[in-house]
Image (cartoon, rainbow, N blue to C red; front, side, top):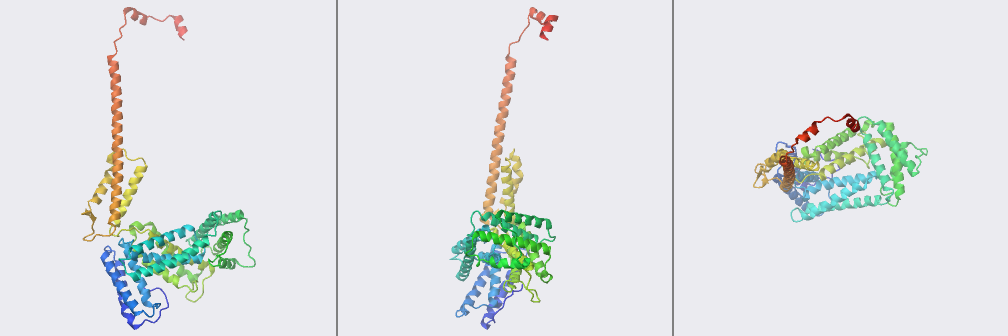
Length: 506
């Protein structure tokens, strides 16, 4: 895997051995990542992690007089830590400091892009704020276990992220509670329009519907559809972007934020309608690469529990980083040096940001379980979900209905050796999470069985009571005195009824 594009300083001779060793470590990490014939073993990852830390200590010793030096060693070192971070997540050590490295790098990219695009939601920022806080706790717990140089690096990166996050929070803080729903609606529409713009077939009817919604919002706000003022739509959009930057709006009102975003949405609709889903041919290759990455990541999002190995995300991160870092002053440039037009620029940025956002979601939803235990973990999650649904549906009518669940739970329980789930001679990480799931499943099954047995006993008692009532009634009939008719009674019973009496009865 080639490095991300960057301008490197000349490499000092004394740093060459460190670079060679880092190349070797990165190659070993890539081999571990690519080998699907066996699970990634914890000890292999930890050994490579310690070897990387040794090279960092050597590098720091050589750079005592030039701490801000940056060259190819730093880029390869970043690759190593990224792979180590994802490997820690793969082996289930998601709550240890090295696992934080990759997530924080992705958070930094996301925040930079959110600041650049100047439209986002509170829930976007809340999720990132929670992740930064959780990362601080993880680093604090690892003070005595991990290399202080790595911990310091992570703390500094979190501080940088926190500074940008606070700036974005202040930006949204200008919105009043009355304006917030309209602003969120506009953000949703703008994102949906950008998604429509990247479909294989341009959805004209859907885009027209969004345009109608925008015009209705403009009417509700009393904002006229923007006049061109002698400018083209592209020029108007470019002008509006200049005034929507975070720096420009630090002292703006919430009303202006909503108004600017509304105009931006109305202009963007016109732009994508004219382009009809077609992008400048000079940027078709970049567009196709980003589209493929986004589609693959979204597919992984659907099958994450069963098919994702976190180290797989590294290749996607590298591709996105190379494309992101190839921009010149924030603009995409074709091989001939031609900058992208506004439509191509915004379309490529949307795909880039969307891909980083999916990677972020995959990282934060990673289970603290080694991939060696994931098959068992996923089976237990499915079993628990089924048992919960059965309980919601009213339970079971007979304990026999639990046999399939009980058999599966017992077969998983029998896989343990001395209370541990073993893979060969290895004890993978995530034992606590899997054992807890197993206990929850057994508890749910027990509750369902107990409830079914109580219902059966209640039904049996009701049946016994019903039988007793019938028997009592039968006994009453048997014990009743026999009624015998006298001769007079018989005659009266058999005597015909006179016609007059018949008429009377009728």
